[in-house]
Image (cartoon, rainbow, N blue to C red; front, top):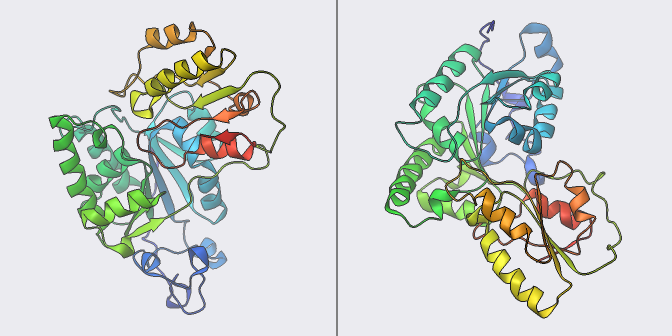
Length: 348
């Protein structure tokens, strides 16, 4: 990697996010969360003439997740004058990221477990990347990237954003190992998010309250509506003809309530022999709660149940559905459900 070091971003007192007359997110003028990152600002035209663009690193466990959940944000950062870097597990979507003009850095994340010893290699790789790129901002996406990013940020410059998009398997399972892991995660989040120029992003009040209970200061927590959907593509459509069809879109995990959904559908099917259930999504072998492939295939052979597997265009699923179902045991309002609502599909 041939990267030249860049001077740390500075800020003019008249261009601070909390300066008088400056409008912050949600229409507020200034704000405590903005002041926590008061040394990072949007580059002006004069900046482009006098020094290189400030650098922004997205730290994401999977390349496809970056494209599905952070691509519009990254494009906006690029349009604002930032040089965008992406640190992630590199898979089938590497070319799509590079075609956007972003600099891709392969970093290995071991999904499905967040052990201190198994994560050392990832932490060292992130620290090395921060030293080489000298970012103005590092945006960590989801729990694993955030927890490892807290450790990698020790004695490193730059502002840090920690987007807690869900608390994952460790906060659901009652096992002893999970309880120990929850304690470690809580300690690291409390320490990392309370540091100067750090902020935690959450998407629902439960996660906001969880961070507050950990001891994270209120001015270091920001709640946002979510990652958003493409409302131009997902427009309301008429209900389909035929029997009542229920659709679930998501990973095939027990934590998502998929087994409970199957049990409930069997009851519905006994009362209404024409009801149908569509399951769109794949198992996730890296996750301890993943449902085995043979069990999913067996469900697909039951009357009224169709397992579609991975679907590239989710809009095609909602075109066939009357009801979108979210059986998850603990989750906010995921993008797939917002997409269903945009299509006019009823949610249950």
